[in-house]
Image (cartoon, rainbow, N blue to C red):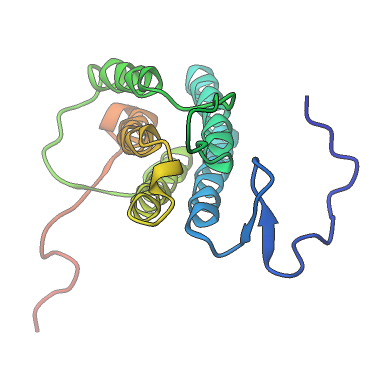
Length: 195
């Protein structure tokens, strides 16, 4: 159980923070950047939950928020190098498979795509599109982490999860937009009239 008696600690005033394994790192380290992007995704999901009138969608998004905290715990605790046991919470393949099942369930009911769609429509859909775009950025930041010297201590399943999550958020935005009926369609070349 987590207990926070005090929100500020002053321990980060020098630009460093602690990881779950007790190591101190710069707040600008790539691992911390990824964790921040994941936190942003979670915040946007909270906005979508507050805007949606669909109780099933709110429940699903709440479960995803819980999973994102699990993912944050994974990122916060680098995988130990060597034969020692790893007692930390980790994102695994079954988490991404669960996301894929939610994508498939949602897609069945959606109107077919006949155009690219613009982020928008209903308020909760717009929030889901925003969450989706931040999730894509989190995935890219994660790939930068994998390319760094910390790659051996990083769970590659996190990147797969973020990729699937952004796909799920796309279809959930369409679901929130009346299964795609309220999607805002892109009309190529229509933004500015020619003189």
